[in-house]
Image 1 (cartoon, rainbow, N blue to C red):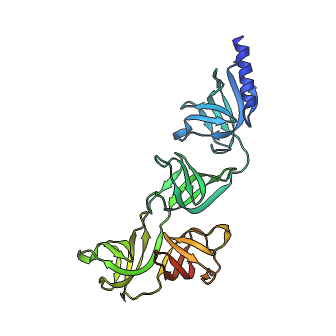
Image 2: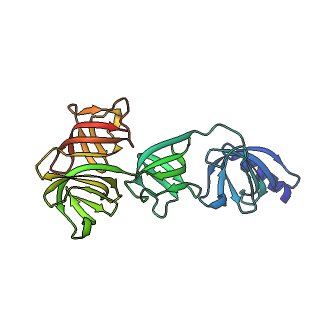
Image 3: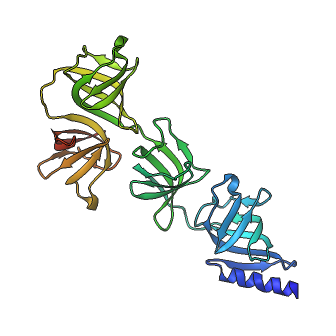
Length: 317
C-alpha cells in the first residue's frame, strides 16, 4: 500500500509542477526523474540549498552531481533532475543535468546604482531602472570606487524573460568630472595637500595631483578628477585661472540619467549635477549618441539651486 501511495504522490506532484515533465520512474518507487525549468536558485556557493524546478522543491547538497556541460545553471534553464522523493513531495537530488536549450541573451549596459539589498551585496539591485540579480557567483570589481548608491557601474549578464538581469560581472566605472569654481578654502599644508573647497565642492588633493599655478582663496580654478559616491572629488589636475569673476560654468562628467521617452529635452543628471536642456541648448555629438554612461562637456549658467541651464553640451570620446 505504501509503495503504491508514494508512486501516486510522485506522479501527481510532478504532473502538477509548472513546465515539468516526468521522464521515468526507477524500480524503487521513491526514485524519480523529471525535466523542468529552474524557477528559483539559492544564493549560496555551489548552489547548495533548495531549488524550485518546474514547480517542485529540489534539495541540493554537497553530494549532488551537477552537470553543466550543455549549459550553465541559471534561472530559466531546462534541467533533468534525478533523485529521491520525500513524503512531502519534494525531492532530494542525486543528479542535476543542464539540458541544451534556447541560447542565453547576453546583455551589457552602463547605469547608476539606485537600490541595493538591505544586507550585503547578494540579492536584487536596481541599476538605472533595471532589476539586477546578484548571486555568490557574480564577479564584482570595485577598484575604481565603492559599491554605493549613485555609483556608475557596468553590468554584464544574461537577460530573463521578464527583462531582469542575472549578473555575471559588475564593474564600478570611474566617474570622471571636470568643472570650474572659485577656491573657497585651502589646507594649511605643504604643497596644499589635503581637502580644498572649490565652488561648494570638497576636492581631495594628494601628492599625485598636478597643480598648475599658485592657488589663492578667491581665484577661479578648473578641476579634473573622479567623483566619489559622496559627491566629493579626487583631483588629478587643478588649473588656477584667475580672479573669481562670474562666468558660465564648464564641467566634464558622465551622463547618469536622461529624460524619459527618448527625448533629450528635459533634465539630465551629469556626475551628480542636474543639467536643464532646452530647445536652445546646442548639442554636439560628432556622430555619437547621448546615452547613459557617455562622457560629456557641459557649458551653461549656474542656477541658484546649483543646477546648470545648459547652453552647449559636447559628447566626448
